Length: 279
Image (cartoon, rainbow, N blue to C red; front, side, top):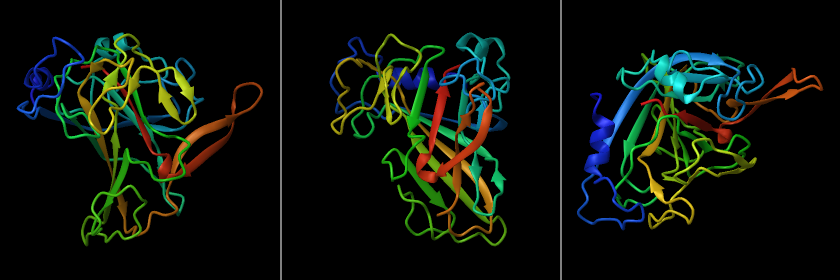
């Protein structure tokens, strides 16, 4: 992907003169993708726990190599070092760390992000607006205990393909073993004002972004359509066949002094990811 891909995506989508424009039946499919290798792991979250290093769950970071609890949108451009194949992508992406049933913590190998003008969960395509520098997005439910339609799983050899349920039928490749992919779908409707998502609850509902409905319509208060992001995280797991007891990191318990007193872990259904735009 070259440095103009996201600009091209916006143009292919037909940059909207009105953010409430109806879907166009003849609108072309606009797509781009970006592959980024794993960068580093920190107990930081510059979106949910800004300027509080070491107090978030363990996160695996991709893209911007300097991202930490203090990172701002301006920092992403001022410190553009990246693990992404496209040097123009100095965005930061992060997701919770993965622990297998035997206690091994497995870092991801890479993540691939797909950008499109589809109004997911519908297949309708709309004109989209370029994302502003510093836009922050959250997807998934870090307290989730049940299947989530926006989180999917795929493992080597499974006959089910991508599924919203935890894989139990992996068949390791004789040479490469098992690869687990976790797919995460982000919202496409922005309120047009706030770069930062203010948490409304522990179960989702972030006030700067919202998902379109099944027809592709954005909810009231979220008039700006931005490209749909879906992230695919990849992990090399060795000879693992059943991921029922695999876990993802959760926010730690803190004592009265604000220090970590206990690390916490949840099931794969607590899968989620964060995006901090630095294109």
